[in-house]
Length: 79
Image (tube, rainbow, N blue to C red; front, side, top):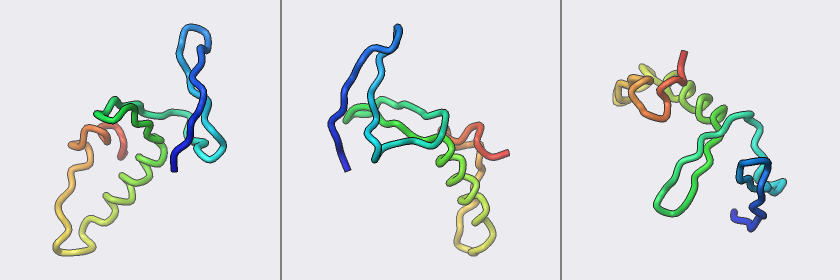
């Protein structure tokens, strides 16, 4: 899904208006610059996925050992 939206100034910061279909529940997002532009990641969803992934450890003998704090995007995720 893609959409066009407005870019505007909010105080001294540049902001974008998110259409309803792109609303984010988390109060914090991670913004990364990629070769194709900007990537906005919902931090709450990222933490939830990391927790779920770590809970899979030991369920399957072929499942790899995971050190949760070794992934750069999950450095402060699992507690």
